[in-house]
Length: 390
Image (tube, rainbow, N blue to C red; front, top):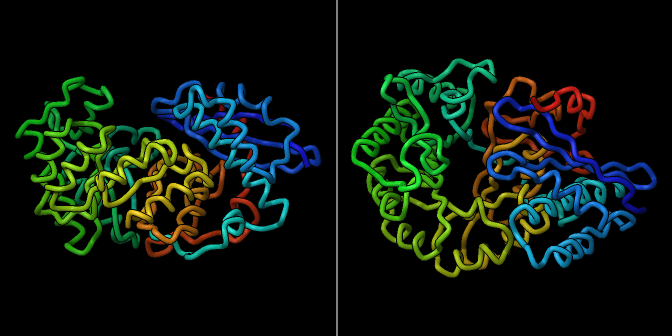
């Protein structure tokens, strides 16, 4: 069996793209992966296409050899888009390798430790503030609507949610505070202020009052402050008993300084590539939960990252805010690592997301691991091609 063809496909997903990789073998077997070309990864499809000639004619069931070869050929410019492209290829080859044997991908790694994967509702309120017109859901315009939505999430059986910083703007309507992504004033300085912290506390109080003290509440602050500001946020949210405070910062000692004073667990590392980038964060004991992007790193590399985290007594949670196929890939990771914490999943999305890949089955806040070959789901290629990016 040899790799014969590599093809990228992109589909409209409202405020972003859903991108897919289709790898075909010379005997007609097809492997799929999903990757992320939005949010800073512009040109990723072109990188995948540029690397594709390097793998034509190789055995897809020897994915370690193929990915090692790609790392050798990109060694002078490792990480970044090259790593994300290799990850997309690796994940598609894993799908082929498992389908060739008639087994799920997780069986290639010793089988699942767990078949029900605890998940939390991610981007709670955030997409409804920013993108409700694409989703067919009511917008969250004020904190009353946030409270009602939080109660709905709990009533659906979820045991946890993750929110961003949602505060009122000058018009009184909620907006997502995102200076770290340049969406409004505040960049590049990323300064904190007492008003923002006070409004953040009101936002968290509304959610905590709606869901009760036992519900798992996560707060994602992304890149929106510098070290000083993250420390002030950590102190401000102490009363809400967060499951974790999520911080993106590219300096391990700085993150360690936040962790030492924080009254809650610290989660980080979703933007890191490979074991080499995780290592200084672990050596600095800078986080309680390592967030691993299986789509950026590839499942096999993510398993190695999880093993390294395990040495430092750190549990892992997948970074998963993409489409349904990505959720399945992250579920295979969550099922097989011993040091698993909880899995992120987006419930809110464009109304046509489930046309591309069937939605995961979630019962009582747990994703049911599929038992079919490969990733356990089938991709609807015709639906993807029918939703060309706008």
